[in-house]
Image (cartoon, rainbow, N blue to C red; front, side, top):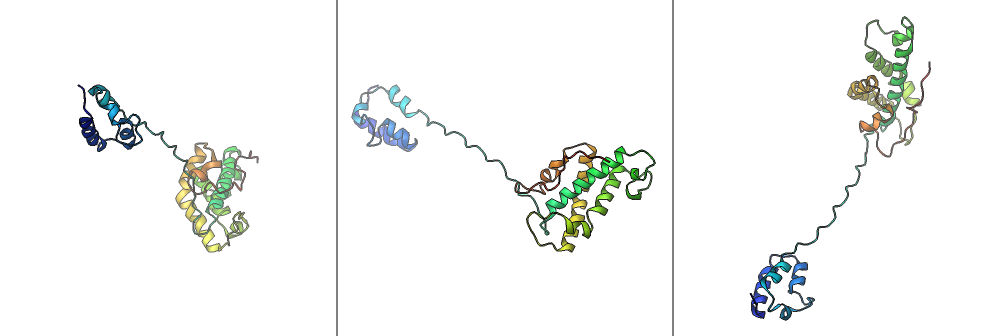
Length: 203
């Protein structure tokens, strides 16, 4: 069908309410259109509507930024270091329990009773050797926080209460303990590894 200039103008005004500005420019609703409306008059319906219906190009999807781990330093500001110290002691205690000959005092960590699960003995060793004020006072303090010892000690005991079982599971399953504190969202991307949690342990 041939279209007059008046009909084209009426149709395009209707279409301009449905299509993007880019389409309006392409099909003749903008002053920037080349050719103008007069050049479209007389065009076939197929040509006109195939132009008007052409979709806008899709914008490339934006890549999502990797989530930064903030960590949880707790009230003391020492929770990340406490976690690493607990992991270090748990590794040592587990290594002793698994490599010492049966009957040795080491086989029952710190006087543990025969028949007590090794995992429980490991956690008792962590409780005794890490969550005491002497050790906590000498613990590395990479961020230079003031240490309020009752708060730091509470933080250590609270850590064992919340993460003792997951830590025991990670040890028995032979997980990579060097990343335990980060995978548990205790340490964040800005925290450093202050203990060598990959070193080979020897008796």
